[in-house]
Image (cartoon, rainbow, N blue to C red; front, side, top):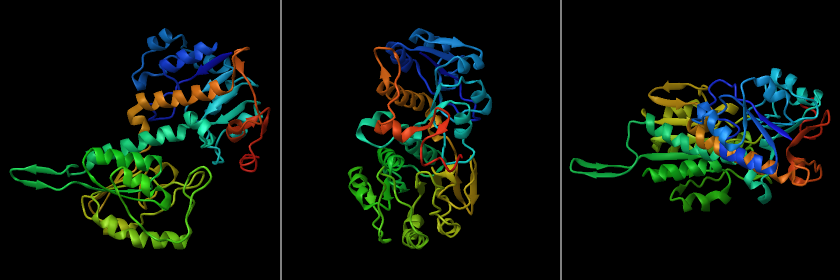
Length: 377
C-alpha cells in the first residue's frame, strides 16, 4: 500500500504532515512511502533525511497524490489535488468540515474516502491520535513567547541594586489545552498568572500550575462529552465581561484561548474592555482563526488601540514547525497503526469502531458522518 505526502501549499504554513522518524514507522508496517521533494524544507528537514528513513522523494506533486492509496496532509486539499487523487483512496488530515467551503463534498463526489483528524474523539484509546491537542499545546507555548517579545516588561521578579522589578502579570482566559500550556510557560518565565475558565472543574489544574483561578459566577456552565467548554448565553457573556473587567485592567499581558468546537469563537473581550486596559498591555488571541475572542482583532496583524497591542497571528504552532510537525506526524502514525492489517499490510475498514465512526466523514461516495450531511449535501 502506497502512502503519499504532498507539501503544504497554504501561504505562511511551515509545518509538514510527516517527519523522517515517523516515515520509519510507516515503512516498518510494510507501507511504501512517497514524499514530495521539499516536504520538510520549512521545518528544517532535508529530503535526504526522508530517503534515509526509507521514503522515496518525488519532485512531481501530481504523481505523489495520484499514485497514493493513502494521502496524508495537514490542511484541506486544494481542488487540483482532489482531482488528481484516485477514486477509492483515503485522505487523512484536517478538513474543517463545519465550514461549507470545506472540500468534504468534493472528496465524496470523487469517491475519495476522507478522515477529518479534528474529529478524533477525546477518549483514552485515541489520545495518541489527537492532533487538536498536540497542536494546541504548542499554540499556548508560542503565545506566551510572542507576548514576551512584544511587552515592554520583564517576566520574572528581579532583585537588583537599583530596586525590585515586579513580576509581569499575565491573564489567561480559557484553561483548555492551550490555556494550560500558556499558564505553565508564563509561570516558567516567572510571571504572576491568573486564569479564568467557565468550567469550575479546571480550577484544580490551574492552581496545580501555580496560577490563581478567577472565580466568577455566571450561572450554570459545563463542558461537552469531548471536554470542550459549552457556549455561554448572551446574558452569561455580559455577566462574565463585567466581572472580568478588574482582571483585564490589572494585566500586563492577556492571552485568550476560548473556543467552542465547531462554532465561531465567542467575543469575550469587547472594545470597551480593550479601552479600559492600561497602555502597554499586550493581548494575544489564539482564537483569531475562528473569528477571535477580541473585538478589533485582525488576522495576522498587530492592531494598536490607545497603546494596547492586539496580536492576531495565525498558525502559531507553525512557529515551532519542527516539533509541531513531529507531533502531528506521530498522531497520524498512531491512527494508521490502529487500523492497519499486519497480515495483508493494508488499511482495514472497521465502520463500527468508535474512533472511525467519529472521524470518518466521507466513505464510498457518500458523506456518512451525520453531523455534516446537511452542511455538504
